[in-house]
Length: 171
Image (cartoon, rainbow, N blue to C red; front, side, top):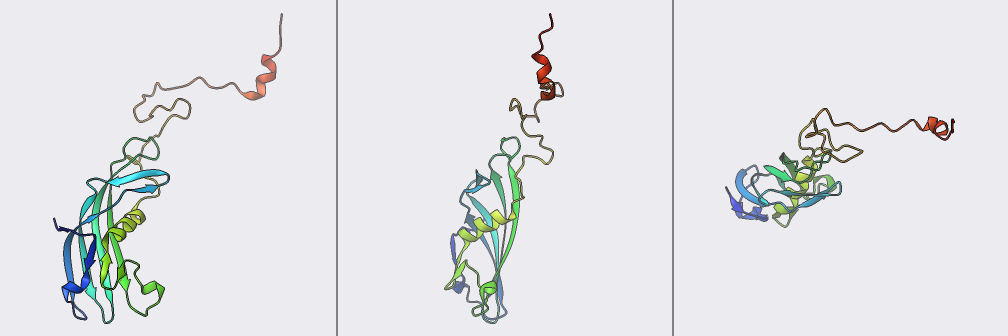
């Protein structure tokens, strides 16, 4: 496990043009909202690998880590317990325009905490579920259909087109 690091000083590596370095770190990842639910990284810190390559005028960066996410399943609301792998890349080339200007690197200081949070959010699936075949909640009674047996049923509502017949009085 690397050193706990939220902001990394790239200049201290003393890389020349064409050189690279790999650094093992521990990065904090703050809880965040996703689709109206809060998700947090278990332990709030993750071991990460940061690859830094000094180009002719800037840097090429790669951040990799795996985070265990705790938060509700979007179908059944049980804890999803999802593991998410993150492999994010950034390029910072001064004078290269917006596409080549990393928002996380400023004056040689890399905002690892912000980059890790954003990279994790981008690596998430469209729906966070406890398992791919999650059946969700019953729309009528709210029971978890993953735990309900095949005997879980409800009486069907009568067809509203026949409602007028119920009002007939036959004596």
